[in-house]
Image (cartoon, rainbow, N blue to C red; front, side):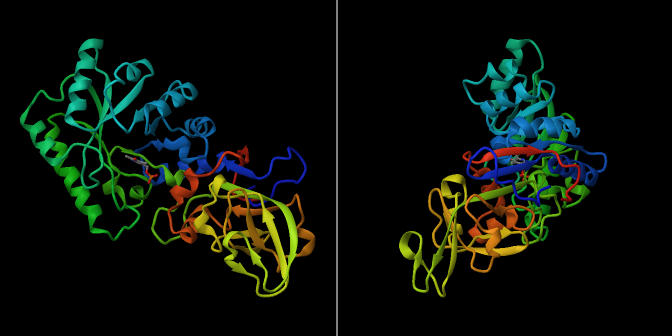
Length: 378
Ligand SMILES: *Cc1c(COP(=O)(O)O)cnc(C)c1O
């Protein structure tokens, strides 16, 4: 399904973004299988990595996912509307001023420091019940979570964790996409060293997408994949084992003849070497097609690979279509900017970034179409 271009009739909207919910569900089930019996959650922060949490949340729930991770309280409230029965954890923690919101919307805070523990315990007293929470332990990211000193203090103060219903202790890997990085084993060791200091048995969670592929030692009781669900790669420099989820088709606005010596786009950075043809496509950096893909990106027309030439502008980019079949390149037609041939990961490599940034940057000027293809075959 992801291999076919949209038909040229229809809404008149410029370009089209297709999101394959079937592929997301297959990716979820694939990861779940790799986890054996361990629970598989899902990171759906940033609007499900740009793919649309209103559609993706229910698709994942249908596939069996029950524990969802968002970054902010607002994302949690949005997801709660979509998924009344899911467990929704808020990674950014329990900030002052949000005390009412968590119980009201049934959100689970991921507690990141000692002050938040105290805040949560007060909330439990006020509510007269054990509110659910998760506890984030830092093992090397130095971003969020309790430090080794905090953990030592906790182990010396028996009552610090009493009150709340602690679902999981979690930590986050810095370099899971590189299985050879010594930091993986080091973080694992630190996590295992900290868990007994909690003075109460807590289930544990360490693995993001790439962490699942590091093997069962990293699985604990719950995994929290994000990127892999959306087709992302799980090992640096290797093709993704997951099904591609997004396909971006750019609409051709104009096809023009260019002569040797002409320049294309802002700054005249691309100089035409021999007479040929340029297709102007209605996708630009304002649509999340990064400007760093200027003269770097690739598009597909059928099986033919064609280069993006010159600077990507705000609303448009230029493709050298000199080598393409004339009949296939016409105003109103489409070229494939992202898909199974040129993936989010490929575009990220060409742009000098990571696929996460490509996905979460996907714009909102496209017609968005959700499909639920039963298999990855076209
Ligand atoms: C974003 C995030 C994840 C998901 O990571 P992926 O690499 O996308 O699988 C898991 N855990 C935490 C704490 C996160 O912030």
